[in-house]
Image (cartoon, rainbow, N blue to C red; front, side):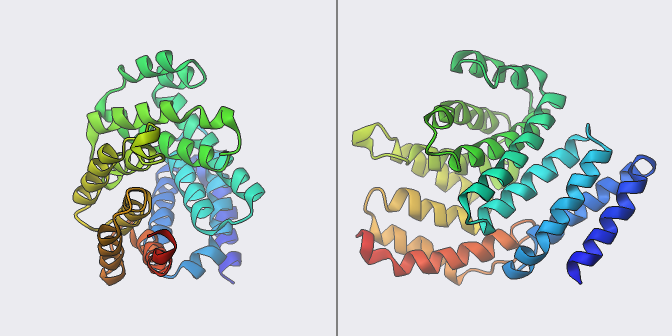
Length: 281
């Protein structure tokens, strides 16, 4: 029934998008909120595919709407991260997210869009011309890009893009570190803790970014603490910090605007990671 209702909305909106674009945008915003504020992951898992099709239809009718493109990128990425276990399907979902985000980037930040496939120096230089007003678009693209690289981690060509993603996230921090509750700091924290210091990693700098992400979200983004524990505390063998972060997550109220679904999933991950502590320490 849920899918049937969603598809009915999809068909109705697909026929009137050109006449009611403001209403379409409101629907997309409300749709995104209804998913991200859901505290029952199973409901999202079962119903989200129909809503993703609705977003596809809205974008088809308004293909140069940056807000719709970024919403599509975010929802496809969130769905793939949380619910898609099959590698081939995950790659398809993240490819759709990346395509939408790059189209948004090309509409808003043409110079950086043109430099995505250029060498690092040219790409990095393009970021210097990006202003604060484009930080949200830049972040939406960077998040989708990072997800795309993650599901193509066996492709050295994809992994070679990580320095560009790091440069992009650093630029966002410089422009507006509050975007997505400090999300750029969170990505930097993960990127800098991929390897121990002895192998070229920068775990202590990564810790600073994790701590800043937690602070900017005012402790509401529980996934930030899960990633802090998994990426940093485990890397440096700090079991007290690892357990403290995960216990904080388990004991926290997951309800927060735009973060409820993520927080609910974070609590599930925290319990699992806490159970696995003896495997790592």
